[in-house]
Length: 70
Image 1 (cartoon, rainbow, N blue to C red):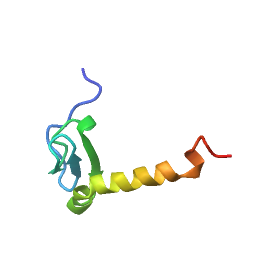
Image 2 (cartoon, one colour):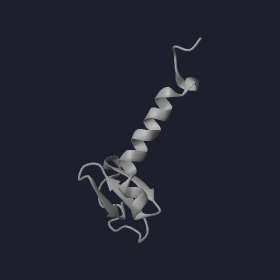
Image 3 (cartoon, rainbow, N blue to C red):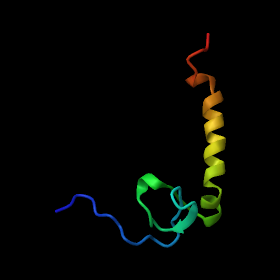
């Protein structure tokens, strides 16, 4: 008996951005390693890559996480 069952259908209202297919999906259509989400709206999922880029810049410039600080 499997401890974790893979859902074959998504829940209505759960939105994901698939990195492999570069598209927004309602419900988890692709494997977890290939997607961002869940998001509450399609609009949020549409901007997933933009949000990730913005967060990466914030983290890269955050002094709390830099090794070269004095």
